Length: 591
Image (cartoon, rainbow, N blue to C red; front, top):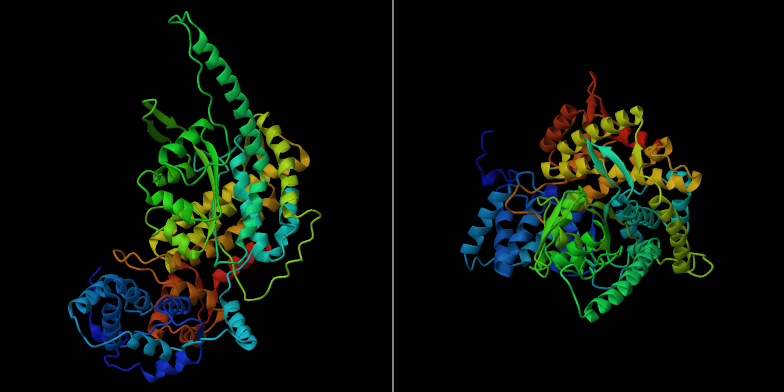
């Protein structure tokens, strides 16, 4: 590919100091309200609404001077954040321009330039508390950007145990969070359930990260821990009995006066437990996994607990954490016992929650592979007071979910006492599965960078594991513990409907990851453009959509050409277009 030579006059072909009047008129039509006068809030508003305030090389250059003058090197990230929504954005060129701005000390351009251009783009500041009408306007604006929730139709067809889990929820977001939380928590408790995926034996273990702003309601996720607490307590009781036995045998050994070479010293019993603390050393985590035959559950309501552990020298077990997702052998060395240990087929499940900033703290970029191993769910939030008396349970939610946990403990013991169970897909389900993910991969190759394709591909194994969990929970209803069980059609369809939504949530979180300035920074404009197109449309329709999203018409035409080549959009002989991506989404939801 011929390298494009950067021409500053092609930065939207506006080599003037002023924002073009047409651009001001278009952006000012939509007012983006900011209820705080600080740089971070302004940047967030620009990113959330994909607003380009860099029209014209002079504006772009002056913004670089403004950030360099006010923030020094720290301003580089701000410069990238506001530059990436321009169609001519290039990460390397952006860095070079900022270097020049830093070197030109005393340019005389202040941060006021940034605030002025932001205001011209329709971003305003409200110093007082929002009034009711303003709240209504904010809600209306946010409702357009809300991420979809799972189809309500799946709730009535879930395994009965999961229906009981979601029963006390009061919103679609709460319902989705509790369903995902329950599946991920329970995924640590099926040691004998497996399937064959891409020729390899895989187990049910999942990684989940529920993210939302503070007070969005993600705290309800903690109730999922109660579902498996009885299992953890049962394991700790067994460990306690073994320890007492060891103490007695060790005391007797120490009192033996006439020891012979054949006299064996008692072996210290393993630390049996289900929950593995995230705030731990690398050796500590691996030791606990080893003591529990490679199985465990990390459950943390603050995602930065794990992030801080990964950042420390003694607790950076990120490599083993990533290996556990695919059951790859984890090796470590115990200094105390001078012992080299291999943990074969580790089965680790993880439930995390936190704010979007905690996601970026744990996963600074998508390149290290950690992002693609997680299910991400972004909870929508609206400024409406919640009815705190809506949930009606006899003795509160803790006792409600404790009772479900006791019920699951009995089922867990039953499965442990039976032979392993293999979950399979029918031939028809296999064909539908492969066809679906082939289309999804094609779609996201067209609207995301290659880094996101790892997420799409690992979403396949996540889908298979969710279907395995649904199938296992059906055993609670019919008691059929045959060594091979085929996934029921309703569970397969529910799985695929959920995956369709989860891929969109992951894409949203992916777009919000900090830009890695060493790599070309992704833009999510193509995704928003595709999703904004109706089922049937004309050339004028897509140009109008592009105008609404502040996308240049030539750029939009290029997007359409790529979408047609990828099969996401069909163009007939009469110049009309058909958005195939909408059809796929609806078909999956109807199933």
